[in-house]
Length: 238
Ligand code: UDP
Image (cartoon, rainbow, N blue to C red; front, side, top):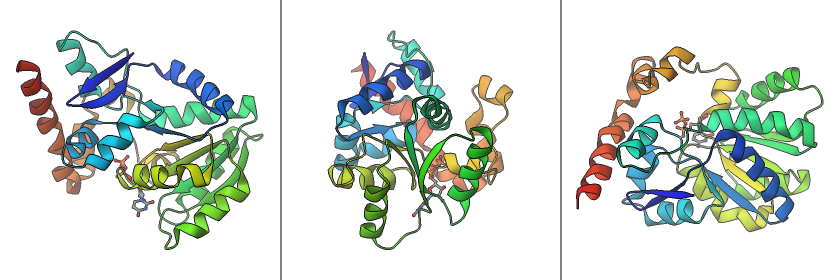
């Protein structure tokens, strides 16, 4: 089932179901885009028609925000759960080991994807990692050639929210990768470069507060949360 938040589509899907969907997308043989809309992306999409088009046409839109789960309950169409990009990435990597899917890691500052790869390889020695590159490249063509040569089944791209989706959307057919997914700063966390909020904080629904305290320079980005609530509730009342 698909829900809508201020005109932005989001799939009502669990983490487990999203992994089954990966199998279907890979079996389709066609290139697909998976996005992880959160309140910030939903707010930004209101004034960015391309972003709206990208999310609404993606093959899968994972609900990456606990506030979206809460709001959906209040509105009487509850989302089953939050599916955070990083949780999806870790599960998809684990699943790829069993299925022998080929993985490409793209994004983050130089060295971050490499470190994340090392950590994942320690966890899953038989992982089929076919390519790694940082997210600060000048020529798209170089990266496109690298990915095409490597022929991954899944391309995890952490190039920053907005930029990664636009990049993947633009080159989706050229890349020809069955599953392309924007994962934001997930590789920063996997590599240990950044810390995710402890589980208890995630469970208390205050991961946003943790990020505000640990990364105060993000405060402007976090204004998206009240904007999101206003946007959704005001459109709901009409
Ligand atoms: N990033 C990148 N290339 C850029 C800009 C950003 O690879 O030109 C990476 C950055 O190093 C970080 C990630 O994008 O790893 C941040 O993405 P976002 O802000 O969406 O992540 P969040 O922290 O919100 O998950």
